[in-house]
Image 1 (tube, one colour):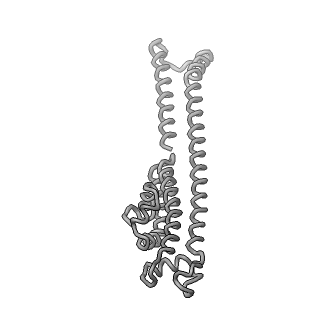
Image 2: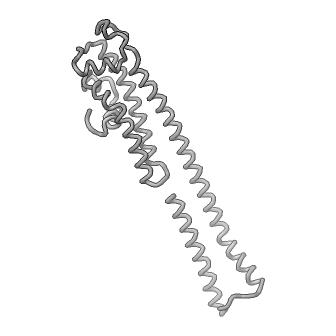
Image 3: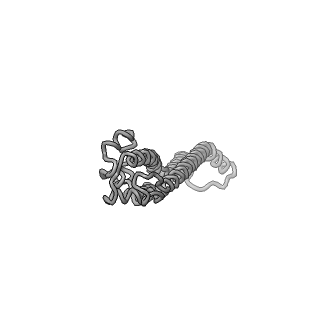
Length: 219
């Protein structure tokens, strides 16, 4: 929108300049009244058309390009958001899958993984190596999601629209992910430990994990 306003303002300035030059030329030739001669008006139209038509064509081409670029960018964002939605659904399914490992006894066999995570985090159960390995694999998948979200938010920030609209939408998206996954991510990290996370997850993924799921604070 800002580019469109600037382009339109530039075209209007050009129109005024062209009109001013023509008027000055008329005044310098001693013609101070509106002509009733059809030939003069034909010359006037040819002058304006010859100067402004190329400028108008360039402006139209530029606006078409900007519109195409904006639509392409928007489609790219939609594709990424749909992919994030699928990753989100898969992660939700993983957290709700029955935990069929018998390392905590039959009492906890078959309960959702999320329930076991909270039980271990609340010290109701004592973690073990098998459970930690499962959580580290889950953390690896979460870190992939977090990096994808980070890329998406960066693209969203550069979306060709008003800055206030973009920031509002970016903050809304970010808040969604924080509220949804920060609590369980904090508990998982507390169970497996920071050192184990750093060994399992790549550095750029770990940074996006920290920023995306906890609002920039250290998990």
